[in-house]
Length: 418
Image 1 (spheres, one colour):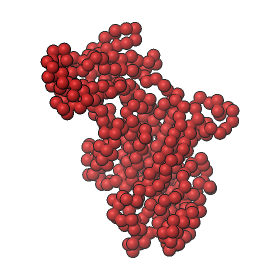
Image 2 (cartoon, rainbow, N blue to C red):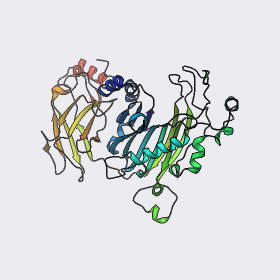
Image 3 (cartoon, one colour):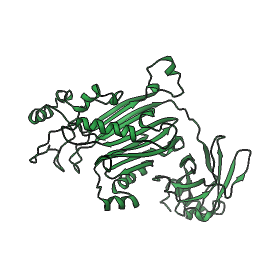
Image 4 (cartoon, rainbow, N blue to C red):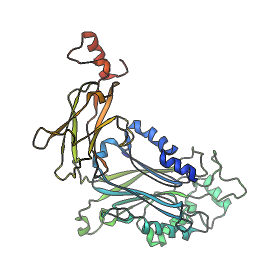
């Protein structure tokens, strides 16, 4: 898996809680980040609007090919003044293709299907990115739309719905699903695709239970939580010869799995998981900055970093190189950093070197990478290959006695040995 996109709705949106979460990371962001970071995923984008949260994690080795990061949101609750309903979006360029992720929470209740469509239309019309390239949602090469969309199962009674679910005869409910019906009639939903609903409706459950609502209201089950996608017409494999010769390359989307996670009970909804395989022709094959750690790195000894930049790279005096321990969480999770332009030396026509003070190198050692952060692009544009920093007890290999050589050899394969 190369990317994880996580959308949550109905987080605690009390003003006091929201303000605390704005200053400190909210518990859900911490939970997902702490779980994914040790697996090599870095949080590259996030946006919160009261109860809505969208998180984007990407494998660290793809970071140099992720560009044009933007986020935005639109409120639709209380006539657009309250953020309990609406949409949050994050967009990014992946190997030269613009992808957008839209997490929505639309109006509730069975009779509000048309209001849900209107809210979605408003989100598409109002939500904009501060960028000349693809400023609106539908301008992107590939759009994923998901969240608590709140569409219900119309016409069928409670007994028929529950009986169909208990017998796994989900197909009897599909034609009355409001979203399925809307996709056939509403122009705004043209081009949106979804996998088959072969899992139990995700709403409404008793808390900490797999039993549907047994309260006095006895809400009818429904597939309120959905994941859809839309490929921009000029990026589809089908089309005229003119479309196929367009500068934007085709994008292939294959749905691998689409199901609900019934084991979770912290909400009256069950979360939905979709896994996809994206086939993207790489329009960007080289990072804007290539860098590497020179020689062997030891605590207390000055270290050398070499790097070179692409001709079209928009450099800045505020660019910096950070030393990151493997498993880092975000671009701000560095061990130490240095400003590139402060001590830059030209060693070749287009190759530069900077020095990192030995006192800044962590004594405990371990596996690290170097990342080049672009101030103008507000993202990491270069990542080195992983390398080892020997722990302080390894000393200088040129001055060690045989006993210390053994320690150094063990430290290289297992830094805890020393």
